[in-house]
Image (cartoon, rainbow, N blue to C red):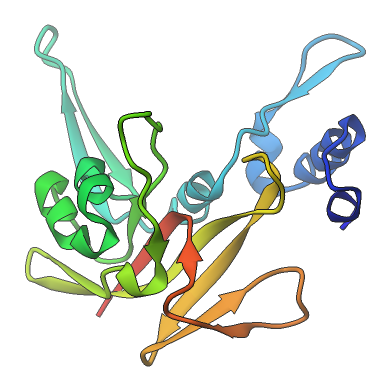
Length: 204
């Protein structure tokens, strides 16, 4: 709230953030002592990073890596599913199914999570995404997944880093908006413009 009232982020805000994160379980491994008097904390985090941490024990699919030179192979379980971001950039979030079909390798039960962070390019026109534009269901290997929610970034100032994350859930053809500033959730209009960082589907 201090940041909102002040309208900008100052140095002490980063110290406050570090004090909170160092006592948070998923960030404890990122804390290290550089010297006797200095410490470092890797606080690099966004909604997608949190999803990977929180869903680390319920993987969605398997990915296999092979080295052609030494023949070493590695199987990795992941809670996230990479998709063809180019398809989303060109045609919007309603083409989620095609984006998944282009890139999917193998799936198990549980969650599919779509990353919508990308490197911006002056030649790419930024699409205006709305809640109604997001695909409500997708299919992978004869399994159907239903849209559950979205984590969106809301700018609070003129700069990209002046903002915070809010969540939208979709159930019974109705959108709800969760923001940690109001006291409770509120209804959201389907034409609400969003800046999605994570889109969550659950297996039907």
